[in-house]
Image (spheres, rainbow, N blue to C red):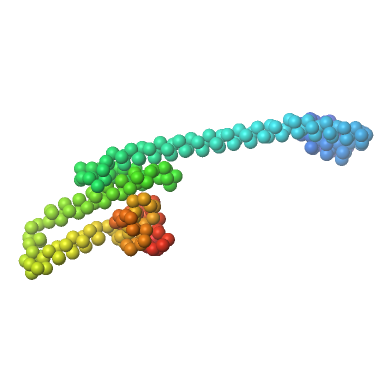
Length: 236
């Protein structure tokens, strides 16, 4: 008669399951084993349940702990790599020196620092001190102004002679107006303002510009991590 039983109904399968995965063995014992008395089944259920808890659960917790430690180590490794990359970029920015005294000879140093900064991830950019970022911005503006003046001085003298022949009383205001226009249109588009101690860009006249006010192109401000002011609502 035992030969007609399914394999999972056989007693040896029950015992094997009790030792290797107690929940299944206990189920098979109560479901299909008619030889064992109820008291013995209760005793065996308790014994193998305790055995299962002591053997299997700590093993599962250990595996989970190993996985957690591995993830933690990866996080620490990434953080260390980000710190090293940020420090390398910061050292390039420090090589610029005084940004307001930057010369055309430092153009390549400034460009190298800018390329390095633009190549950082958002997490890495967050590790760059604000003073270093301000140095890079001011140095870029200083060199851009010097380049603009160099181009202006290189124009043929004949082109400059024509406006000088206009009325003597209007010549100086026109020259000042042209210089102001050249400065304002030097950027690629919209002009906004930033401060020495903030991460927002503003429109001219914003109350946040009461203490400091630095002219910057909108696209340049956005590429360097500045965000729009919520008070004056500048273009985005």
